Image (cartoon, rainbow, N blue to C red; front, side, top):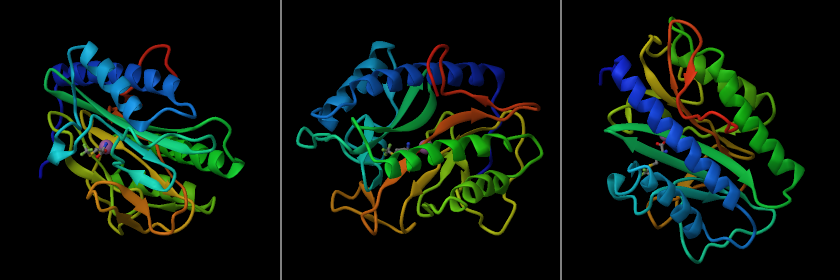
Length: 255
Ligand code: MF3
Ligand code: CO
C-alpha cells in the first residue's frame, strides 16, 4: 500500500481531530480513580467526542464494540470497557482513543496510574512515554521508519523493558490504519523514507517482562503472556521538512 502524503486541507482536518482527541483524553484522565468502571471511562470519552459532532474512530472498527480501548495492568491494548471492571488503587490503565473529524482520524493513547501506584509501575509508564519522545527526535524528512523503531527499542531495552512485536504503529489519515507500519523494534531493514506530509501514529507498547502477548477469548483484549504490566503511549504526528508536529494535542493540555 502506498503512503499517502496529506494536503494542507487534510492536515488542518487532522489537526482539529487531534485537538478534540486531546480534550477527550483530558476529560478521561480526570475521571481515572479507584472505584470507576472501565465502562464509565468509555462513556465519558465517547460523550466528549460526540459533543464536538465527531465520531469515535474505534466504534465498530472491525467489529470493536466500544469507543475507547481501556486496558488494565497486563492488558496491552484493545481492552473492552465493562461495567464489571472496576479500577483499583495501584492499577495502571491505558486509554486509547480515536476521533473522526470531517472524515479524518486522529489516534492517541495514554497510560495512567490509579491512585498510588508502585515505583515499578510508574517507571514503566514514564519510560514508555519517553520512548515516544525519543522517536519523535528522529521523525525528520529523509530518515526512515526504522530510525523510529530503533529509537523506541534502544531506549526501552537499555532500561530492561521489552517492546511488543505483535502490534505496530501505523499511517493514519482518511483511514485509521494506513501504510506504513511503524514497528517499535528493528526489522533489519530501513523501511520507507519519511517525507513531509506523511501522518503516522507512533505508539510504543512496552512490557516489563516478556514481549510475547496473547489474545483473550473476547478476541480483542491483548495481554502479556507472563501477566506482567504493559504500558502504551501514542500520538498522531505530521512529518515536515523541519520539526515534526504532534497533531493529537491541544493548547493548554499536557501531552
Ligand atoms: N488505537 C488502535 C491502534 O492504534 C486502534 C484500536 S483498534 C480498535 O491501532 F479496533 F479498537 F479500533
Ligand atoms: Co494507533
